[in-house]
Image 1 (cartoon, rainbow, N blue to C red):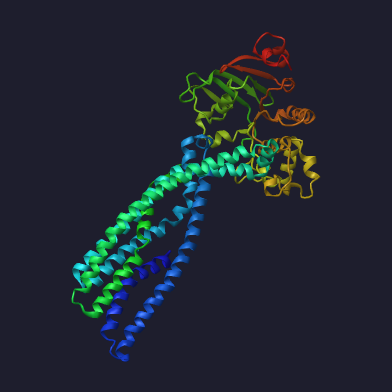
Image 2 (cartoon, rainbow, N blue to C red; image 1 turned 90 degrees about the vertical axis):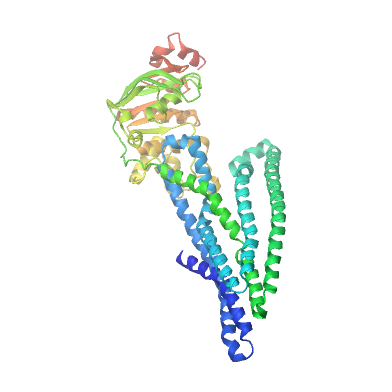
Length: 549
C-alpha cells in the first residue's frame, strides 16, 4: 500500500516537473554544458514516469488480489457465523449476492481513491506550473480537463446503475449455461432431449442483457461527443493563450507540454472518481453483511436431552391469511421415538422449525429439559438437535469431510466416530470397499465416485449420527433408499433410540409401526395422537392418509 501511494504521488507530480524541465532545457540549450543538467533531469523524469507507471500497475494488481482475498475471507467467515434465520431471510440473501458480486470492484476501490487524489495533485501542480507561463491559460486548462472528469464520473455511475438490471440477466444466463454444462444436470437434460429449450432461454436472457448494454453505450457515446466538443474548445482556447502569451519559445513549449501531459495524466481520473462515488452503496451493503452476522456462542453439542415439549405453539408467517401451525402440543422423553405425519403443507415442517427456534412463534412455548428454549441463544438451542431435511446437502467432498460437516468448528471427530456414524446409516461396508476409504472424493463434478440418491441420503444421515445431539429430527430419512436398506436403517434407529429423543417425519406407513407415538397434523393442527396400532383401527385422518398402504 505504501509503495502504491508513493508511486502514485510521484506520477502525479511528474507532468508538472516535466513542464519545468522542458522550459529550463529550452532556455539554456545554447551550449552542451548549460543544457546537460536540464536534459539529464528531463530524461530521468521521462524514464521515472515510464518505470513507475509499470511498477504502479503491477503493485496495484498485487495489492488488489490480496485485498480481494481479505474481503472474501471476511465475507465467507461472516456467512459461516450466520444463523439459520439469517440464511432464510431473502433480504440477507440479496445483500450476500451483492457482496459476492462486488468483491472485485471493492478490491480496486482503494486504488480508485488513490487515483482520485493523485489526479487532484496533478491538477494543482500543472495549474501552478502553467500559471507562471500564462495565468489565464492555466485557469482555462483546468476548465478544459473538467468535462472529461465529469463525463467519466457520470459514465461510471450510469454503468453501475445499469449493471444492476444487466447483472440479473447475466446471472440467469450463467445459471442456465451451468445446467447444460454440469455433469449431473446436463446428463438429465440430454436424456430428456430438451437442451434446445434451455438454449433458447439462454439466448433470450443474453439478448435482454445486450439490449440494456447497447442502450447504455448509446447514451455514453452521445454524452462524450458533447463533452468532447466542449473540452476541445476550451483546450484550443488555452493553447492559443499560451502561444500568444509572449512567454517565448521555452514558455510556449513547456505550456503545450503541460497541457498534453495533463490530459494523459488525468485520462482515467473520471473513472476513478466515478468508481469511488458508485461504490458507496456497495460498501454499505458489504459492511452490513459482514457486521450483521453475530458470532454464535461457543456451545458444545448437547448429547443428552431428557425431555422436549411444545405447548400450544402457533406460527403465522408474514403475509399469510391463516396460521401455518395452531396450538400444537407434543411431548417426548429420552428413549422415545415419535413421528409427525400429515399431508404436504399440513404444518409438519413448521412444527419442526418451531422446535428448532428458526421461525418466530405467535404463541406457546418450547421447553428443553423443562427450561424455556427461548431463554437460550440460538446456537445453544441448536446444539441440542441434529436435523436431517428432505433437501439435505450433497457435498462433493471426501467422505470424511462430508460426514464431519455435521459437527461445529472445534469439535474433534475421530475415525472411530465416523465409522460408527456410517454404520448407523448402513454405509460403512460400502466405504470400506473403496480404495481410499474415508478419503474418497464423492461426486463426479470433481472427478470423484458417483453415488446413488440413496447413498447420498445415507451420507446425510451419517452427518446426524456423528453429531451425536440429544434430539434427532429426521425428515423422510430413507425416502431415496431401497426397501431392504430402509428396514435396516429404521431397525438401527429404533434399537439405539434409548440414548436420545428421535422425531421422524414420514409418509410410509410401515416405518411408523415401531414409534412410541404418532402425531397426525392436518390444516395446521394436531388432530390425532396414538400408536400405529391404535390409529389404524380408528376412524380419522390417519386412516385416510394410510389406508392404501
